[in-house]
Length: 319
Image (cartoon, rainbow, N blue to C red; front, side, top):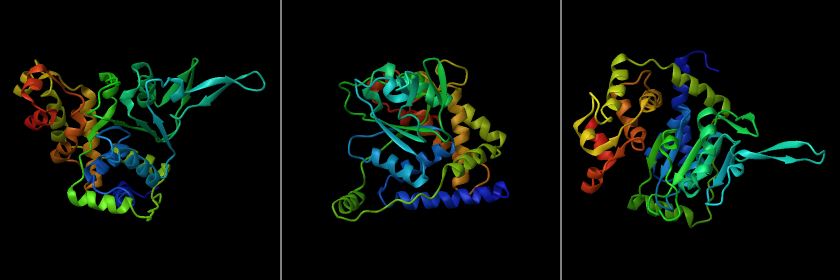
């Protein structure tokens, strides 16, 4: 597609800036969340967006899908949702033969809206799709299209009628991103843009072929040994009761991050470096993605909860 990796790296920066411009037509503010979501797509990672209702989580994901030129399906998770409602099911056609009807998971971008509102059995239906990029129905395996991303949303304040995501599924999300309230100025801009007849159309600035190329380009980025050592050392600090554990991990954590966190720190640092116009990541790139990578992989103990110590505070101590 490009004559060299250097040309590809320059093209990635241009495409990223175009993406931000298109998304900015609809989404006001949330720049860090937009950056990290696009970054995860270049890393072939899935994202869990956590925020109170009304912060445009669903609109953000839909807009990103339009700007990337990818197929998009939304699954509204409810207590009565069945696994077949996600992956599909076999039916008898008019010739009395079984025919597989694909579910909404067969899309490039799948929005799992309010993912914690459905029972664990249905949540687990996404596990194989997220990790293996395929689904199995009646003993037959069906490959999902590429690229494939699950972007899930979750409401942090309403716990009635919800089912907490199991650790195994949480670990499959590259990032856990928190959406905050907009600033005063941003909220004025939001209200102005949504209470007038102006309709900003989002144009597709990329396609599936380009995304797949950039995903491979990110993998080819060279990483210095000291960056590998920093990323793995940072994760090792989160594991209480081990040789390299940080004192805050021993005091406030009951469980630390696994090797997948180290992998995501490196691949995320690579993508962040390229999106910043650099050809190789440094320790600052690792720090840039560390909170989003580690936030959902660390389990606070009762001491941390009693003292009101937040996960973000513990991660900042590890630096």
